[in-house]
Image 1: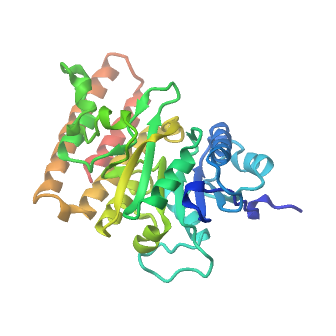
Image 2: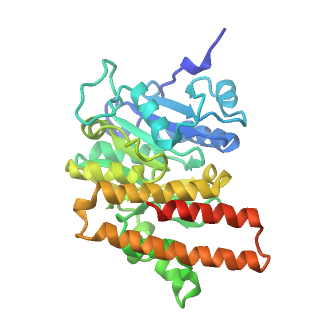
Image 3: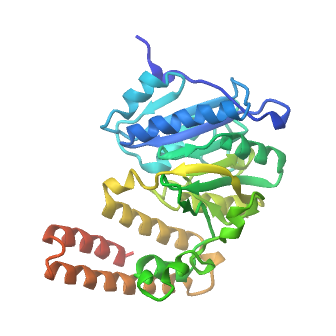
Length: 351
């Protein structure tokens, strides 16, 4: 019986490199069957448009125990893809590491590698992300011609065409407050969300075509050089989901690599399709991961930074808890809904 899970197709790389370089694309799926289909189709279309040679692209889909037919769709419609169908949801980070190990990368920095040849570049791509035209070739050729670049990301937009930030500065205490408080109710509040104070890069940089250096790019579309990955190791599995790409990019920079955003490489990102299925667990995972990042990398921040972040987090959670309770007393939300929300706040207040 044919088993599509062990089928691997190679396919592509940019002509600008002038010699064959191997590219691997990893997609971790969870109950996003229609989006996954579009994402996979866009990978092969972008590879073709970019003029990449066949036999140089390897696509790996790791499915986190989906129940909507994701594995079956991949097996039936994309037999050339290597499908790893997990029996449990390992989360974004561990699932990506499963694929990285399959590609021959060790999870530990500078560890001895497997005997198989590792790809020159690895792209982490969300199942809700669609590559536009030659985006794949632009990302790959940029790394090929930029020796100091360890990783790069693309210009993202939502499904309706609205711009989405795809790269950020490492988080500050101000970002904690801006993320949790209703800043939009303040005069000019929306402008604060898109400001440097909130870790955003300017619209002027994104509207151009020149690559620019950033702190980190979103894991929705993050391409890393294989050499960098061999040096720093895989994703930190202490992050179930969220912040793993921030940690990865920081580790790359600590190893003297640079991270860039490419405004000319466009990706349509239907953000948060998996996490919206479980919003409060996703919210809890986000802040648990952020606090882990602050603790792990506390030496790069000023003394007392972690304490300040904890204080801001608890104060803003208290504000949100009171607002949720008022909404319940006014009949705007159900008792079950407010109980779930308050439970998430209590969990985070103990971090």
